[in-house]
Image (cartoon, rainbow, N blue to C red; front, top):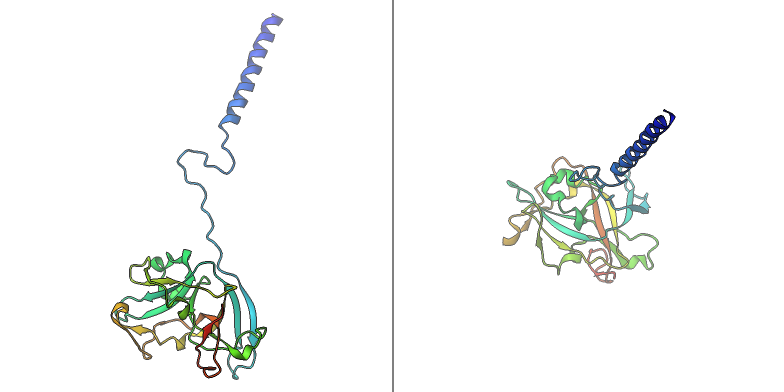
Length: 233
């Protein structure tokens, strides 16, 4: 009798071990989908470029915010000639990392210029950061010339075009928060058939301010203050 009980207990114990082993075998591997074909967890979107404060100018006119110039590095910058939809046919020059171009297809212009990973080509002409050697010979000006020799490519939204930027070494650009009122300079008319500047058109309705992007350029003595000159490389 005892031998029967022992044999039954041994069989039950063996089945328990086999069941445990089978359960361990079926356990999903950490970090992989438990069921074949099930999508893995979504990868977080890459963070926006990090800006570091470079210079704060407190000499602004009374009632105006002090001028803050931030330094930023963008891995693969492109200049986008953003073609707005009718009836304006306005064109705005945006700067972003090439990997963010799909935003053009899904995000309206007013929201694009509010995003931290999207900048707007600057119109101003500023003194360089105070740490720049021979600062009186340099100016911060818009980035358009960085793309002047690049062939434009079609953008994902089907209307706009873009060109890659050749950013001067060490690859730094500068960001200034500016009033959107100055950005009534939008180019009107089709890009490929000529264009003109229309200062009367508000190309950014509903936008109060923009984060404008600049590059550091060396200015010839006869041109200082005019916003032109050689790009610092």
